[in-house]
Amino acid sequence: MAIVAVFNAKMELAGLYVLLAIVADFFDGFAARALKAYSELGKQLDSLADMVSFGVVPGMILFTIFYMGTSSSEADENLLLAGQYSMFIVTLFSALRLAKFNIDPRQASYFIGLPTPANALMVISFPLILSHDEFGLSTLIYHPLFLILFAIVSAFLLIAEIPLIALKFKSFDLKSNKGPYFLLTGSILLGIVFRYAAPPLIIVFYVILSLILPPYKIRK
Image (cartoon, rainbow, N blue to C red; front, side, top):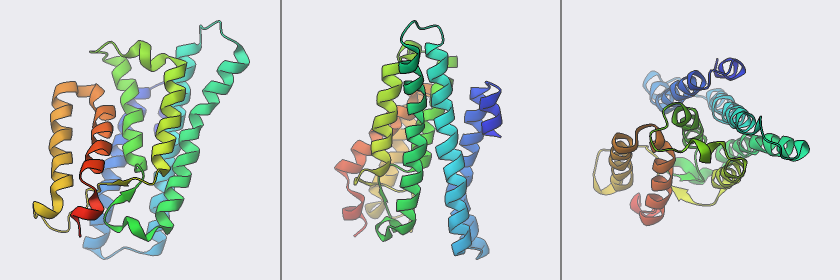
């Protein structure tokens, strides 16, 4: 549905469908455990769904934004075309990230590298920022160099050997869940203050907080 929305230039609608996929992705594990319906097949289907929702769709959104921002540009056509297709580096590295996650036993209680839903959340915020530009960020987001740099940095974060906090609560104890509680509180505050522009700031906060409060130390 999100892919069809992108084809029809309904970028905000595509973002909404991805957001629904993020919510479903967060709760599907709870549902599987509650219903005792978890299986190896479910694990593989989960990653396949993630690849479409958080890999293919974000690449298409970035591709479309790049095209919209450069459609009237007088720069070299071949250079612009190369830049436009470079947006799919996010899709390629999302696939690599998901494959690594499935075979990495370290990621049971925390993540190694940026989760694909978090990266997708950043991408789907761009159409919202462009439609409700309260902070004058449209020029920046439409700039081809910004988009290329964003694609490269986000692709690196997807596979970076950086331990990141996971919102996986085995208990509600404050001491062992300091990272998740700080992350949730900070995210809510950033959302209230910056609204549609909050997701990229939340991801930056997420990475910095994970470096300050390494999840592998807190959960010991």
